[in-house]
Every structure is written in structure tokens, then in C-alpha cells.
Amino acid sequence: MKTKLTLSVEKDVIMKAKAISSHSGISLSELIENFFRQLTLNENRRHGKQESELVRSLKGSVRVPEDFNYDSELSEGLMKKYRK
Image (cartoon, rainbow, N blue to C red; front, side, top):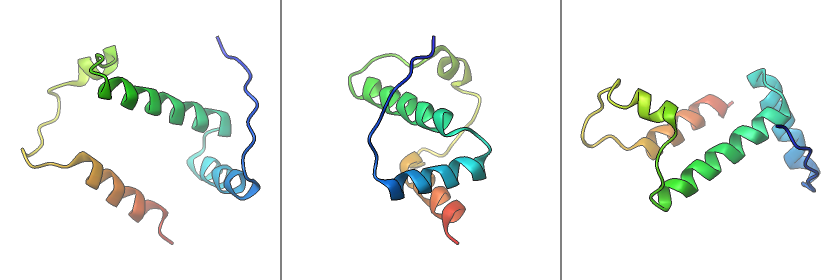
């Protein structure tokens, strides 16, 4: 069930978020919801809670090197994507 949420956010942040949303082809609401979803998943991981069913079903489908650093790879990918 969807619930309406009212937020107070700096205007320049909203403008940038709308640009990212438009560039990505998803609504601003969906972008915010995805952020909150990721935020809560990260929080759950910190407290030792289990992954979602989707994550469990995908485990083992990709092999990465032992020294693979997800955070640095993600940061580098995002820098390349949004650097203009």
C-alpha cells in the first residue's frame, strides 16, 4: 500500500534529483522510494538481519574475485556515469 509523504528539502537538491529522475526515466517518487529501500536494507545488514528473498535467490549466480570491493566499484561507476 502506498502512503503519501511530505518532505521539506532544499530547492537545489530537488532540482538535481528531478534531473537525475528524468535522465533515469523513473519518477521522483520511485527514486526516493528506491533510496529509502536501499537505506533500510543497509541498516538491516548492519544489524545482522537477513537479505530479501530476491537477494537470496541471486546469491552465487555471479563470481567475483576475493578482493572485490563493492563500495569502491559502485562509487567509481557512479562517478563515471554522472561526470560531465
